[in-house]
Length: 389
View 1 (cartoon, rainbow, N blue to C red):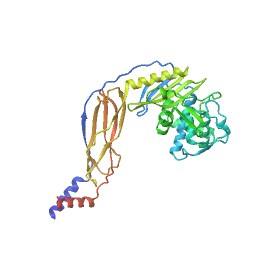
View 2: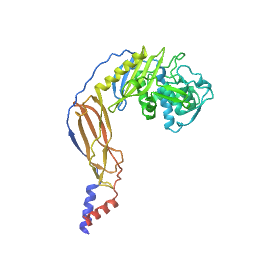
View 3: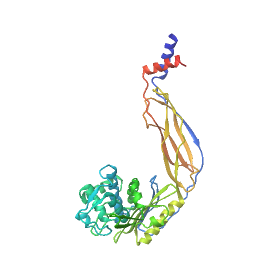
View 4: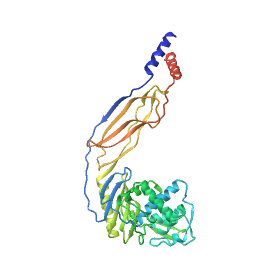
């Protein structure tokens, strides 16, 4: 027993306090090459972004404030989808149309005052056929009035960092609007936010549909859905002031692109320049994703557990087309940790390099919590280890 006591005492002196960390690193080296091209688009402004990473692939006069016509409805739809996500609204909920909503001109489904329609049918009408009256009806149903809803649209724009955007209505009609504008960059930002709601892409990829029990047909205003491989959406717009605008989305080989074109002179020019922009992205870039192999547990010092499980966060980056096999990966990981340790605590990182240049990194985090061991728990552990080696 005297030997056991001395052993425990010596162990306590060694373990408490535990104040050091050891760092180790593992590397696997390869190589990558970047490629780039230039474009000269026939439009007032343009912007190309990768949805997954937010990487900007191309921009042309991307921050000029311009009228955006029905592309406005991207923000309207975003607030509607957030209301559904928050439980404030449901797809099968019934909306009663007001006189104000029914009075909207331009693209419409000819709602009548007092008509009742489901949220889902109104949503499809906005997304597919760009119905101004449906957009206003949804806005009023959520916020009580179009004015209140527009205020929420502008607040959301600020939250998203859309510094070159201001809304005056829910649909983009600009005959009387004087301060209704956005930029190609801001449109891409709100498009990306809307795409986080997958239901929207289900609607925006529909070519033709019906409402009112099949009595009224809906045709997609975005011809790319039918004629551009991989097209998934998102919203067109045109007025005399705005000319022809679009926020187009397309998915190929796991890369989802957002292409914005503003101020094209005709619909055909808009569509042609949008195809050119998307073609450029798909031809020259690819989405690199990496799932780091399972990592060994890390030793824990002074904890209720002797080791802790760790995992790497997901990583994605845009690199040159076909260069995914030529990426440098460097793993830096703590070899031991002092308790207490919380779940999700960063204990290392994985860095990714393309041609020696850092393209991004992700954290290695703990998968569980480990409390600091008490003297009583430590004593029990040592006795158990001594008696049952």
